[in-house]
Image 1 (tube, rainbow, N blue to C red):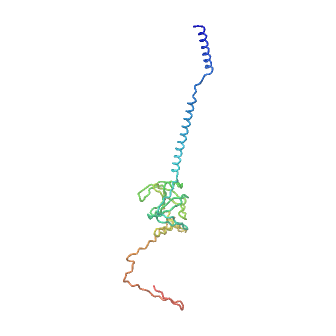
Image 2: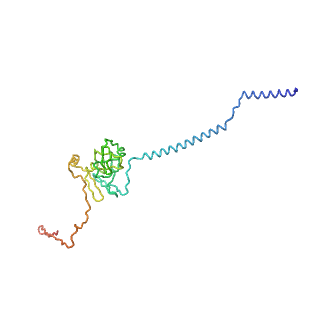
Length: 262
């Protein structure tokens, strides 16, 4: 190796050492800016998706809760029923297409649909409505119904309002198979009841003696007084050959007289 070559090699080696020294003093870190930005964007997209679908899921839950939290007490709609007429001390009910008398009562100030049931010994309330009115759930009893024997729970009603009449301190039953209140005879006995064609009139007794007699279970005219339609029977029709006999009566008052035929 000549001097020229040796100087060239030495100079080259010096430059290389200088670069390595610079590199050692100032380490160059790998640049990951592009990868970091990509991960950041991916995280933002993922969080946005989670936020969006989380809101959708919560909205569905709220919607389901709203549907499920609708009032338990629902007044059934009967297409043929008419709005009852309020009268002093009572109510006038119109028969529905099935011949039943229905309306709305207030039990402990909670509105409930009811049906008049003269075949029921006592008033019976659906379980859900009894709970809504805060009625006490008492002991179990066995009750005979049109569908057979069922278990009911005893309860006590502080106040029952039908139309303009209010009855206080009533015993009643609670039945889980009903969807409306059945107004039985232990409630109806406090009313004067008149039925005419498709109309039922309930007027509460106000005479203390009548009420005392009812509560003491003494004989009283508490059963429905029916005004049936009179049907024309053949026995009611006068015979064609039968002659009507008239009675003549002369009535005089002073100088004035009049003749009456009957």
